Image 1 (cartoon, rainbow, N blue to C red):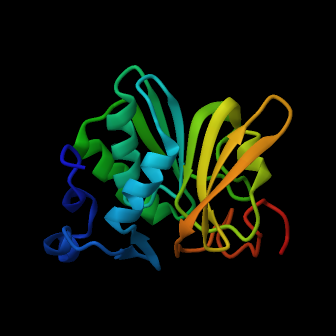
Image 2: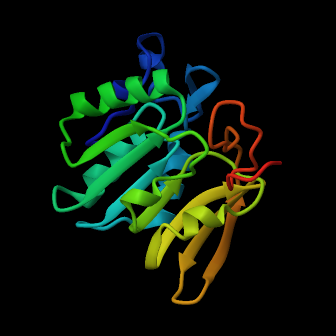
Length: 192
């Protein structure tokens, strides 16, 4: 967190609150997550140098930059964000951080994650699903890890050769996971 200060990923009017340990607005109803929550998620995720990582709900780009710092230049991080204006804001913030092995793109409408870019060693999802989005699990390598909130509980999902294992950790609140603007999906790309 020292190497990637939150202030550089906030709107100008919020930058003086960068040390606040709570969510801060970044526009269009989206937030920069509480730093303590981000730390919890990164510890559960366990990214390592050289990993390929997907950051779903990249928002301001802060978690994408943190992940890029953890995987280093031998790794690669792709952030996806469903709202074009927020994706552009996050991409600009990320460019200023000078981590060329990381990028942020607008998510494809109706597609959860980035299946064409996988498989991934790690997937971080900073939006709350109603059910485990199996589509994201399928984008992991065997032994890959997905961390995301589902119905308020933080899940750590590890893909096995035949299925997946789930660990539950703590209670958290996030913006809802959707695959496109106002699409009414349940976070798995299926109608609610």
